[in-house]
Length: 435
Ligand code: UGA
Image (tube, rainbow, N blue to C red):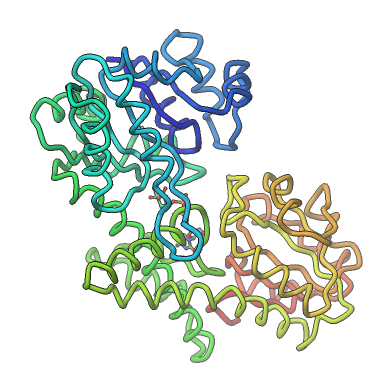
């Protein structure tokens, strides 16, 4: 089997490398010649644990190639995956599909022999049909099938999510297309991964329904956490107590500063717009979007309250700025709202993140970036944990206390235990738990 992966962003690169690990010959295509050159030198443009080794091994084994030549890659492929970006369109919140449709046109011109054209990017319902129309219009003679095969990878654990997924969803119209997809995912049949075959439109909606459901689940526990603080209850015990009910499930019930990243904010907004236009508004998701937006500002207020009601003239030490750990991704990270709000309130900020600072520097001006977690703390009036990187879970608390001017710790990810922190002499604030 041979495939072409169009787009070497997060999804394209991870999927391409993983398919080649499955034994498929993969050619990854990108318009950015500099990026392709770097990939051919073995440089990985994104931070994803294990990806560099995977790319190196597959490239050495002659199963993974990088090129700007879309035509050659498509002509020899059994399946072509469209994995280009679908950012939020400015103004209306819809997904911007110009890259997807541009790719469809170029693919059409290069098709040769029967080819399955797969949308891998998260695309609104109806996109597959439009891709089909564009290809048919460009090349009325082409022999092809359209498939929707959304990915459910999480940044930071994308490789294991691909290799051992909970399920694979495939929306296809013909048996021939299903057969090609079955062959591509053959190794997953061996580990008995459920493969859900459905229509193209249903598959497209499954992706949005999954992401918006998860965003709602997080938002639910965040609101319960706020209620816990008022009632003196413990949100971790509530999450455990409800999560053990198999109908609810225990994952994605960890409270925090609100969801961020390249997927949930964009996908919730896009589905809200689609539903409004279809005349079946998703009021629950509209509310989720609104609550999550406001939560970030509320987190800044929480930090200010923990600092005695004002941060004017104070220095705050910030640990973690990425939207979650094990990634350098800053897209829609809660820190992008929280930190400017603190600066506006008069605080000076010193920050450290193990992988995100390079990106963050461009987006968050006026911050003193430090080399280590401890360097942020010297003489600071309070310490704030925004992202739960593992290295922040085991800080030397004695050292932290001796470095800080006052022992104020705001932990927006609940990585410490309130009782333990009280015993250690900290004035500790977290989310939904009190000591
Ligand atoms: C998410 C989904 O989890 C993937 O299944 C999906 O494939 C991906 O979007 C996508 O559509 O491409 P990702 O954005 O990488 O993956 O990150 P998550 O681990 O889902 O975290 C998203 C946000 O929710 C983060 O800001 C995280 O801190 C937050 N979160 C997550 C919580 O606040 N609490 C939780 O319990 C879980």
